[in-house]
Figure (spheres, rainbow, N blue to C red):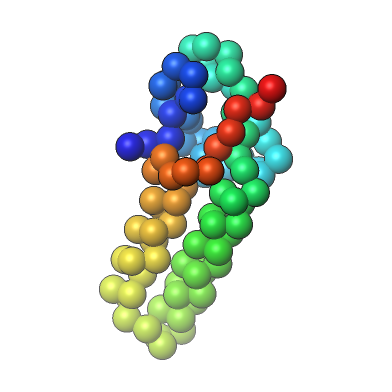
Length: 92
């Protein structure tokens, strides 16, 4: 299941999920709830993007097969888009 508003269940914008800074907030267009990412989300997504970057550089330099990118990219997308415990919180 994709990340959705904790109050009304409307899907959170993919733009905010991918481009929002760790300290930014998201206001649900349907109910007006304000959501924010947690430090856990920041750490997990930073690690995932770092691993993808490392593998990508290795592929570009010819040290790894391009097929090695499939798993890290899939995990990174999952961390960005899937509703995992502790990823977002409601701001009061």
